[in-house]
Amino acid sequence: MGAGHAHKLYRHGHSPVHGLPPHTKLAAVFAFVVVVVSTPREAMWAFGLYAVLLGAVACVARVPAGFLLRRLLIEVPFVAFAVLMPFVAEGERVDVLGLSLSVNGLWGAWNVLAKGTLGVAASVLLAATTELRELLLGLQRLKLPPLLVQIASFMIRYGDVITDEMRRMRIARESRGFEAKGVKHWGVLAKSAGALFIRSYERGERVHLAMVSRGYAGSMPVIDEVTASRAQWSYALALPCAALLVCLLGWTL
Image 1 (cartoon, helix red, strand yellow):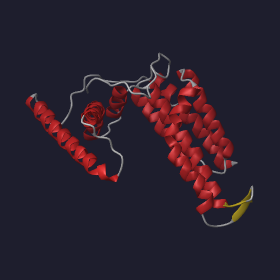
Image 2 (tube, rainbow, N blue to C red):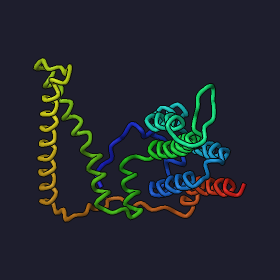
Image 3 (cartoon, one colour):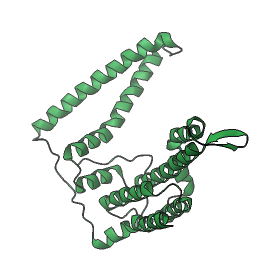
Image 4 (spheres, rainbow, N blue to C red):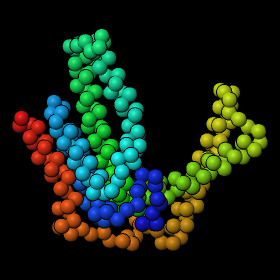
């Protein structure tokens, strides 16, 4: 596994959450999301408790609320979809502030907003306390198919390379007086996209040949063996276990 790349979602720190092995955090977040999705939408109080649990984790991890809220903006498209649901859904209607809204649509919007926001918040906390390289090591430790781990590793490693290539191509176009102003310039942009694809493909071929010449046989060597103690597993699984208790209460009440 190659060297890690810092990403904008990661926040450097030395909190107990940062120090947990990556595969324990991945398992905890996955279990938490499953519990949240399994909670009946009518148990509104349960989602409030889930938010409190995530807030407690953020405090322990020393992740500021502003940092978390800014990263939650990624779910804006889902919020827009949820806002439209009460207007387009069929079934029983109810008047709210002079607007005729669907009851099923209102419940559906709440379901999407509550569960989606909690899932995104949990993922943001995971990314804020775990470096990309550690996430890949955690996925490898959890026995994710090696091919998928390798694909993710190369995406992370060469994403910045391709982005930089796009930047150089844009500067080259602008230095020659090009400025996209309308549909008539789409052909130039399409040719640029095609050139970028060809360059990326050729780079991939060169990288693959270089790896084969160095003994690559379909699997990457494991440099760091990540392990976790029972105490670390217990600490990581405290979040989904607490959420599970809340979910069970939501189904019984």
